[in-house]
Image 1: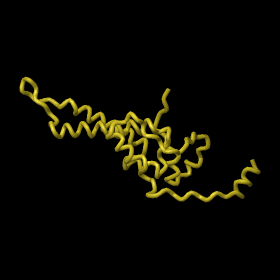
Image 2: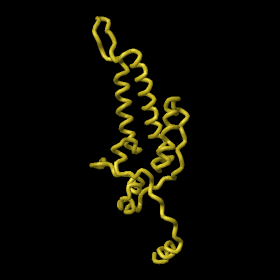
Image 3: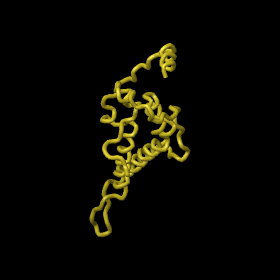
Image 4: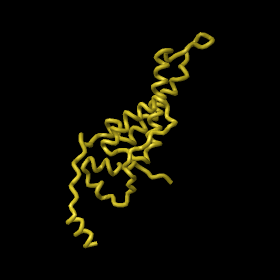
Length: 157
């Protein structure tokens, strides 16, 4: 059975916000923060979006190698939206039927589905304004490592 309620806020987002809840999570998986590799199967428009967004996400530690597929899906949705919107601008959002009536262009649902997918995946990476509420404009400075404190804490354990 699926979990109910809101999805938990990622720990790194909580830490960026300065929340105590981020420090309270002890057993969370911490993937390697290495930059994801752009998949070869991405279209040229999707690759352009990848090159635009990955450095921004990396700068605020909101992406890891494990996020590559979700990020690729976001980039392809952006590319699909761009292609559909370009065609709709040229051809219009309606077409004429054989009987002389008007109907929606077949790319209107494609564009709208791309928008839905973009908005859903945006929230995964904090790409919308509401997802960034509470995040500081720059990440807080990480405290310097204190070897004495680490030694004393390990000695007590």
